[in-house]
Amino acid sequence: DAGVTQTPRHEVAEKGQTIILKCEPVSGHNDLFWYRQTKIQGLELLSYFRSKSLMEDGGAFKDRFKAEMLNSSFSTLKIQPTEPKDSAVYLCASSLTGRDTQYFGPGTRLLVL
Amino acid sequence: GEKVEQHESTLSVREGDSAVINCTYTDTASSYFPWYKQEAGKSLHFVIDIRSNVDRKQSQRLTVLLDKKAKRFSLHITATQPEDSAIYFCAASPHQGGRALIFGTGTTVSVSP
Image (tube, rainbow over the protein chains, first blue to last red):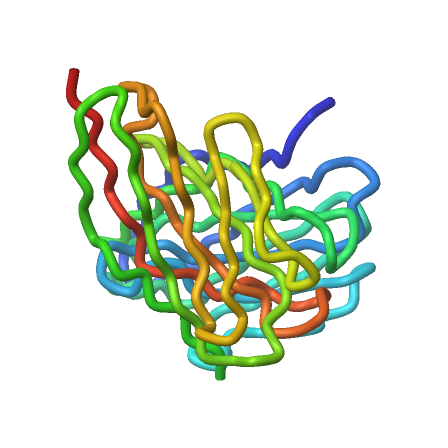
């Protein structure tokens, strides 16, 4: 069974650019999560979808971060415009339902110069 | 909102000894408590979880204890092995499922021969 896949694995962007990160959840999973991981802030929620509907978003990330679920098997996270403080690992996770284990993808490591 | 505090930032143990990581949470409504392991350069890997309807759960060398009164839960690793070396994250879900996880800050466990 394929796990959660994320592309690209690494991304380098100039300040002010628009970048789009992609995630494919485990087949059949209904819930999808985007988290950001940094050494200083740790793991923070960006967005949570259930059956393609946005259930939660991290309040601090609303202005330049937009996550979408175009269909049940594909999600994107757009950061526009990027800033150096956005440098982090972006993790996508999925679960069968909200009460089940979340499985994480390999992450996208973003560096903004 | 929910806050999860992970008390040990680092833990060094000798191979074969036990390791214990302690976490506390603030929201009495939290009912789901998973643990994740992150090896160097890799993503989060689910290891074990516990729900609020039990106070103990064991899986091979891992045991999770939950004290709802004290709002505290802990991960016990027995007979540690070098491959247990990693960062361990505790987390809590602040509702009866269907919510994103709130993570602790991580404990770096080092197992020396």
